[in-house]
Amino acid sequence: MGNAYKRVLLKLSGEALMGDLSYGIEAAVVQSIAQEVGEVVRQGVQIAIVVGGGNIFRGIKGASAGMDRATADYVGMLATIMNAMTLQDALEQLGTVTRVQTAISMQEIAEPYIRRRAIRHLEKGRVVIFGGGSGNPFFTTDTTAALRAAEINADVVFKATQVDGVYDSDPKLNPEAKRFSSLTYGHVLSHDLRVMDGTAIALCKDNNIPIMVFDLSVPGNICRAVMGESIGTIVGESCEIS
Ligand code: UDP
Image 1 (cartoon, rainbow, N blue to C red):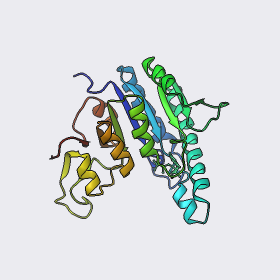
Image 2 (cartoon, helix red, strand yellow):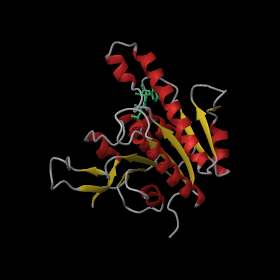
Image 3 (tube, rainbow, N blue to C red):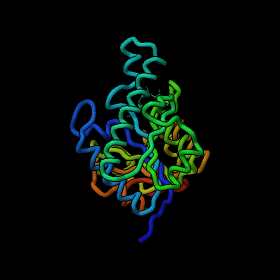
Image 4 (tube, rainbow, N blue to C red):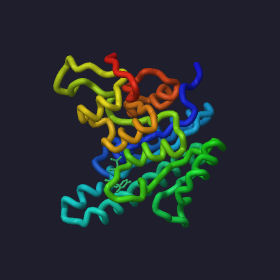
C-alpha cells in the first residue's frame, strides 16, 4: 500500500513530549517519536514539524500569574525552541537529517524561518522543525501549524493528541459516545470542538488543508496516518460517524 500523503505538517504539542512527567521532556517519548518520524521519512514522505511548548511554559498561565501577556507569550515561544532542539537531537541521533528554523532569530543555534529554504530542505528529505511558533504573541502553535502548512503547501496537518479522534460527546463520561471518522471544519467551529483553536481551523478551511486527529501514544500511528488508514478523525469537507 502506498502513502496517502507526500508532504505532512506534524503538530506536536509540548505535552506530547512530556510522557508521564508533570513538566518537561521525557527522553524515551521523544526517542519513540523520532524513530517513527525517521521511518516515515525513509519511506519518502516529507515531514515538517511544529512543536508546542506547553510542557514548559504557556503564556496564558504566566499572564494569569501577573506577567505582561506579550512577554509571557515570548517566553512560551522560547520554550517551543527548546523542544525543537531536543527533537532535532533525537532525530539526528537516529540518523535522520533535520533543520530547525525559528520564527525568532537565534542564528547561533538554528536557521531563521525562510519559507523557500524550508521547502528546499523538505525536497532533500530533511525534516524541518519549526520552533518559536509564529513569532507573534497572542497566537498558538496550533495556528502556527496551520500557517506553516499553508506556506509549505502541505497535503495535510497531523494533529497528534492523546485521544484517538473527535467524539460526539465526551467518551470518558458517555460510554455510548461515537467517534467521527470525518468531520467538517464548519461543524468543529460551530460546536466549538477543541480539535485545534478556531484560528487554526479557519486557516485550514480557507486553504483546504485537511486535519487528521489521532492518538500519538499508539506506536506506529504516524506511519498509519501517512498511509491514510482511518485511525482517528479527519477534519475536512465531509462528516461521518465511524
Ligand atoms: N506562543 C505564542 N505565539 C505563537 C506560538 C506560541 O505566543 O505563535 C506562545 C504562547 O504563550 C503559548 C506558548 O507559546 O502558550 C506555547 O505554545 P502552545 O501553548 O501552542 O503549545 P502546546 O499547547 O502545543 O504545547
